Image (cartoon, rainbow, N blue to C red; front, side, top):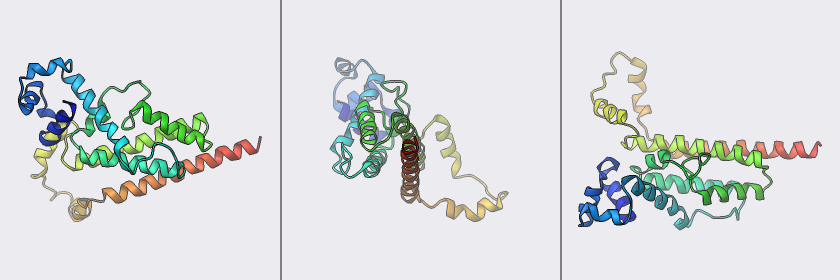
Length: 220
């Protein structure tokens, strides 16, 4: 049923998902679904879980840092981006649903993946403090970039986004000459290149953090 709910959201958008609507999609009465889930909120939580679990089936994402911690984080980041682009209507759910613990940060919100993340960095010499700092920086980068990217695909992140989309086609830029001139440049989709460059910059920053930590140990 969770797979059907995911397919329904992919096809019709998040706002269209109701127990009655999903029941019709499955060819059953909406009330019959309550035998499996307690309601729409539980259904959404389940959808988020199965989407994140897609990482385990991604052959390019490794469970352990077999080729170093940077390769591990690169593969994980690209796996999360593939999920966001495959299920753009679901990604805002990943960003906003209550996590398993208050310190778990989206989009890497699975306890198993957070454990793998911290284990990979500890294995390569990160202290607990620097590993947590890396986790915060990594998730902040991913969440900000991927929410922006799915919003550019037309996915509403909030009700205001729907209103803005409706007004976009009628925006008059005649009073904004700089915007009018560079609008073609602003309209280019550079998402993939920006993602790659920003990820590389983040990994370089974490490498400097690790080297600084090692230098501090040697100077003691």
